[in-house]
Length: 405
Image 1 (spheres, rainbow, N blue to C red):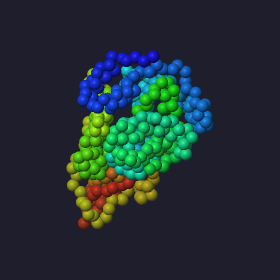
Image 2: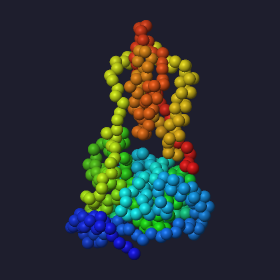
Image 3: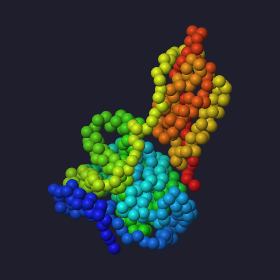
Image 4: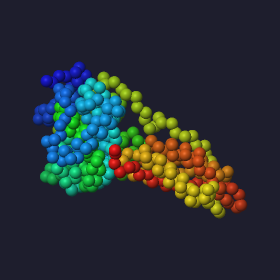
């Protein structure tokens, strides 16, 4: 039995306004797509049984109980009602969002690292271009006997891709899969694809026929990511228009944790229909996050003798090793990050004005810089026989654990 809550009906009539003037055939397809995204399906009451998939008997069954225990320990109900995946190409991440009924907002369950990538910014447009698609997709295949351990198929090319991509060879066979290799897919480690496979298959078993997967070029509200994007795109008007539409959907979900309705017009352009009455969720933008106040310090760019760590070079290496080990434990599994910290050693040997200038892991930038300033003491630089301030750089390599428990 199907039924439609009042907020779904409001959004549906709003969508009707958005698609007025579209061709009849595309209108029909989009209407079906809309209902797939917003309809509340009757839920089964029993937990899914995966024995009818041969590889799931071996792989999925081993992690099933631990995943359910982890979900319930974080306040999620089992069985799941809805699952939504959100992928970011630049950051190499796949987020898993879940909820148990159609009305409530999604909640973030986990962020899984993508362990390999190919191509660059921009959507996939032809076979062999090695591009990871960008846009709005859904899972259309669960492949237990994949050569890449397990695989989740995406409906590339979708209607937009069919219009805008190479008409003869748009490409296909796009998956989220294991084995950590890719020429256009989204690969994760074998144990992580078991998690993703299990979660999505469980939601499908409970009645969610349409499991959306939105693929974005980067996190639109992250300054460091935006800088890298602008450097690559260089004001290409087509990409600006294409990505601005994707950003509308991204921002709506960030503000509400609800899915927008995605439509495609006769030109293959995405149209994002958003419920104007959806309750807003407070989010802290990167621009609003507090940052350390660094007072201007005059320093010498050329000195006769560079600063040396109080305990000697071996002690500095030990300190850096321990710092990297502590922060690596906070990383998602199989994710490697290289950071470069810029700082000033003042005339008294204190570390001042530390900041991360290369590498992106915003969640720990301030903590790492605070540790530098509090814990690193130096014999200051010397110029013409006097102690002076000078600037130094230090690289830190962080490596997350191989896999999740």
